[in-house]
Length: 175
Ligand code: IMP
Image 1 (cartoon, rainbow, N blue to C red):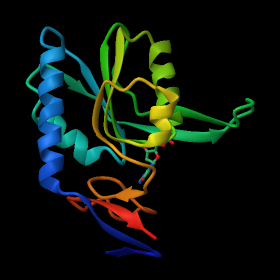
Image 2 (image 1 turned 90 degrees about the vertical axis):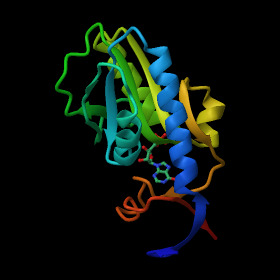
Image 3 (image 1 turned 90 degrees about the horizontal axis):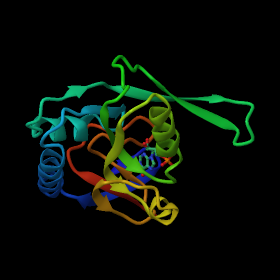
C-alpha cells in the first residue's frame, strides 16, 4: 500500500488489535473497580483506540477529549506543549490518558506534568503502541498494547501527513 511517497505493509491485523484492546479494558475495569475514572483521549490519533476501549469499560466514568497544542516558548527546551479542550475539573480525580503511540515520550511527559499540576489524584496512561525510545526513557505507562521497534506506522487512527487514520489494520512503512 502506498501513501504519498511511502510504502507500507500490514503490521498488526485488526483482529489482533481488538484482542489486545479487550485485554486492556479488562485490566482497567479490574484496577478501577471501586473508582470512577475520567478518560482523557488525546486527539486526533487516539480516536479509534479510545472508542473501542471505552466501549468495553463497565465503570461509571467520564470522557473528556483533549488535544495537545505546541507553541514556541521561551524556555530552554524550546517548545512548550499544553492541553486544550479540558472541560472537566480534574482536581482529586483519577485520570486515564488514552494515547495512540508513544515515540520519544516528550508529549506524554508534558501532559502528565500538567495534569499533576491540576491536582489530579492519580494519572495513568493507556497507549496502544510504544516505541523503543520511550522504553529507554522509562516513562511509566501502565497499559501498553504493543511494544514496537522504531518503525513508522499508520492506521487505526494513526496518520502519515493526515492520511491513513481510517484504516482498520495497522501498517508499517517499508524502505
Ligand atoms: P512523542 O512526543 O515523540 O512521544 O510523539 C508522540 C506523537 O507523535 C503521537 O501521539 C503521534 O501523534 C506522533 N507519532 C509518533 N510516532 C508515530 C508513527 O509511527 N505514526 C504516526 N504518528 C506518530
